[in-house]
Image (spheres, rainbow, N blue to C red):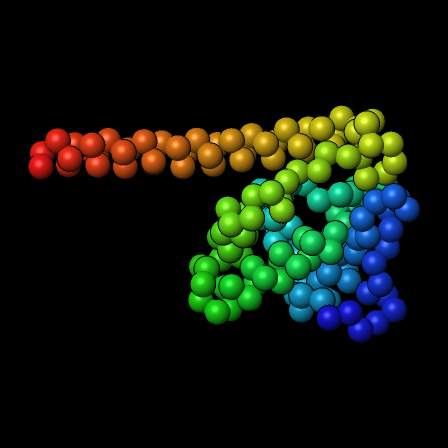
Length: 152
Protein backbone atom coordinates (compact mmCIF):
# COMPACT_ATOMS: atom_id res chain seq x y z
CA UNK A 1 0.00 0.00 0.00
CA UNK A 2 1.21 3.47 -0.80
CA UNK A 3 1.98 5.35 2.36
CA UNK A 4 4.49 8.05 1.55
CA UNK A 5 4.55 10.94 -0.86
CA UNK A 6 7.65 9.36 -2.45
CA UNK A 7 5.49 6.36 -3.40
CA UNK A 8 3.30 8.45 -5.69
CA UNK A 9 3.50 7.27 -9.29
CA UNK A 10 5.43 9.34 -11.76
CA UNK A 11 4.07 9.91 -15.27
CA UNK A 12 6.34 9.23 -18.23
CA UNK A 13 4.10 11.14 -20.56
CA UNK A 14 0.73 12.77 -19.84
CA UNK A 15 -0.95 10.51 -22.45
CA UNK A 16 0.42 7.30 -21.00
CA UNK A 17 0.32 5.13 -17.91
CA UNK A 18 1.69 6.10 -14.51
CA UNK A 19 4.80 4.31 -13.35
CA UNK A 20 6.77 3.86 -10.14
CA UNK A 21 10.55 4.05 -9.74
CA UNK A 22 12.24 0.83 -8.52
CA UNK A 23 12.91 2.09 -4.97
CA UNK A 24 9.20 2.69 -4.41
CA UNK A 25 8.28 -0.72 -5.82
CA UNK A 26 10.90 -2.48 -3.69
CA UNK A 27 9.56 -0.70 -0.59
CA UNK A 28 5.97 -1.61 -1.53
CA UNK A 29 6.89 -5.29 -2.02
CA UNK A 30 9.06 -5.33 1.11
CA UNK A 31 12.20 -6.47 -0.70
CA UNK A 32 15.64 -5.08 -1.48
CA UNK A 33 16.58 -3.31 -4.68
CA UNK A 34 18.68 -6.32 -5.72
CA UNK A 35 15.73 -8.62 -5.04
CA UNK A 36 13.51 -6.42 -7.20
CA UNK A 37 16.06 -6.52 -10.05
CA UNK A 38 16.01 -10.35 -9.93
CA UNK A 39 12.22 -10.39 -9.95
CA UNK A 40 12.17 -7.82 -12.78
CA UNK A 41 14.19 -10.19 -14.98
CA UNK A 42 11.63 -12.93 -14.35
CA UNK A 43 8.78 -10.53 -15.02
CA UNK A 44 10.33 -9.48 -18.32
CA UNK A 45 10.91 -13.11 -19.35
CA UNK A 46 7.26 -13.96 -18.74
CA UNK A 47 5.48 -10.79 -19.89
CA UNK A 48 7.42 -8.09 -21.70
CA UNK A 49 10.16 -5.58 -21.07
CA UNK A 50 9.29 -2.92 -18.53
CA UNK A 51 9.40 0.69 -19.72
CA UNK A 52 12.70 2.45 -19.12
CA UNK A 53 13.56 5.94 -18.02
CA UNK A 54 15.96 8.08 -20.09
CA UNK A 55 18.90 6.55 -18.16
CA UNK A 56 17.59 3.02 -18.99
CA UNK A 57 16.42 2.27 -15.45
CA UNK A 58 13.26 0.18 -15.17
CA UNK A 59 9.95 1.85 -14.43
CA UNK A 60 7.05 -0.12 -12.99
CA UNK A 61 3.48 0.39 -14.24
CA UNK A 62 0.80 -0.16 -11.59
CA UNK A 63 -0.43 -3.33 -13.36
CA UNK A 64 3.07 -4.85 -13.20
CA UNK A 65 3.37 -4.02 -9.49
CA UNK A 66 -0.02 -5.66 -8.82
CA UNK A 67 1.07 -8.77 -10.76
CA UNK A 68 4.23 -8.97 -8.67
CA UNK A 69 2.21 -8.62 -5.46
CA UNK A 70 -0.16 -11.36 -6.61
CA UNK A 71 2.72 -13.64 -7.65
CA UNK A 72 4.46 -13.22 -4.30
CA UNK A 73 1.19 -13.94 -2.51
CA UNK A 74 0.75 -17.12 -4.59
CA UNK A 75 4.22 -18.31 -3.52
CA UNK A 76 3.47 -17.43 0.11
CA UNK A 77 0.20 -19.40 -0.05
CA UNK A 78 1.94 -22.42 -1.59
CA UNK A 79 0.11 -22.05 -4.92
CA UNK A 80 3.39 -21.65 -6.86
CA UNK A 81 6.97 -22.77 -6.28
CA UNK A 82 8.54 -19.49 -7.40
CA UNK A 83 7.55 -15.97 -8.33
CA UNK A 84 8.35 -16.69 -11.98
CA UNK A 85 6.14 -19.81 -11.93
CA UNK A 86 3.36 -17.71 -10.41
CA UNK A 87 3.86 -15.07 -13.11
CA UNK A 88 3.65 -17.84 -15.75
CA UNK A 89 0.32 -18.88 -14.26
CA UNK A 90 -0.95 -15.30 -14.26
CA UNK A 91 0.12 -14.84 -17.90
CA UNK A 92 -1.55 -18.10 -18.94
CA UNK A 93 -4.79 -17.30 -17.07
CA UNK A 94 -5.12 -13.71 -18.42
CA UNK A 95 -3.49 -13.59 -21.87
CA UNK A 96 -5.33 -10.50 -23.15
CA UNK A 97 -4.67 -8.53 -19.96
CA UNK A 98 -0.95 -9.13 -20.43
CA UNK A 99 -0.74 -8.15 -24.10
CA UNK A 100 2.50 -6.51 -25.11
CA UNK A 101 2.32 -2.74 -25.52
CA UNK A 102 4.98 -1.67 -28.00
CA UNK A 103 4.51 2.09 -27.70
CA UNK A 104 7.62 4.04 -27.00
CA UNK A 105 7.30 5.15 -23.35
CA UNK A 106 9.21 8.39 -24.06
CA UNK A 107 6.92 10.05 -26.54
CA UNK A 108 5.74 9.36 -30.06
CA UNK A 109 4.07 5.96 -30.10
CA UNK A 110 5.37 5.02 -33.56
CA UNK A 111 9.05 5.82 -33.12
CA UNK A 112 10.36 3.12 -30.77
CA UNK A 113 14.12 3.05 -30.38
CA UNK A 114 16.18 0.10 -31.61
CA UNK A 115 16.89 -0.90 -28.03
CA UNK A 116 13.19 -1.17 -27.24
CA UNK A 117 12.60 -3.09 -30.46
CA UNK A 118 15.37 -5.55 -29.60
CA UNK A 119 13.87 -6.06 -26.13
CA UNK A 120 10.43 -6.64 -27.65
CA UNK A 121 11.80 -9.15 -30.16
CA UNK A 122 13.66 -11.02 -27.42
CA UNK A 123 10.51 -11.18 -25.32
CA UNK A 124 8.54 -12.46 -28.31
CA UNK A 125 11.17 -15.10 -29.00
CA UNK A 126 10.98 -16.32 -25.41
CA UNK A 127 7.17 -16.46 -25.60
CA UNK A 128 7.32 -18.34 -28.91
CA UNK A 129 9.79 -20.87 -27.48
CA UNK A 130 7.50 -21.34 -24.47
CA UNK A 131 4.49 -21.84 -26.75
CA UNK A 132 6.45 -24.31 -28.91
CA UNK A 133 7.26 -26.40 -25.83
CA UNK A 134 3.59 -26.41 -24.83
CA UNK A 135 2.55 -27.37 -28.39
CA UNK A 136 5.04 -30.24 -28.50
CA UNK A 137 3.76 -31.50 -25.16
CA UNK A 138 0.15 -31.33 -26.34
CA UNK A 139 0.99 -33.13 -29.59
CA UNK A 140 2.63 -35.92 -27.57
CA UNK A 141 -0.45 -36.16 -25.35
CA UNK A 142 -2.71 -36.42 -28.42
CA UNK A 143 -0.60 -39.23 -29.90
CA UNK A 144 -0.73 -41.12 -26.60
CA UNK A 145 -4.50 -40.72 -26.39
CA UNK A 146 -4.93 -41.81 -30.03
CA UNK A 147 -2.80 -44.91 -29.40
CA UNK A 148 -4.88 -45.77 -26.31
CA UNK A 149 -8.15 -45.37 -28.20
CA UNK A 150 -6.88 -47.68 -30.96
CA UNK A 151 -5.97 -50.29 -28.36
CA UNK A 152 -9.49 -50.28 -26.90
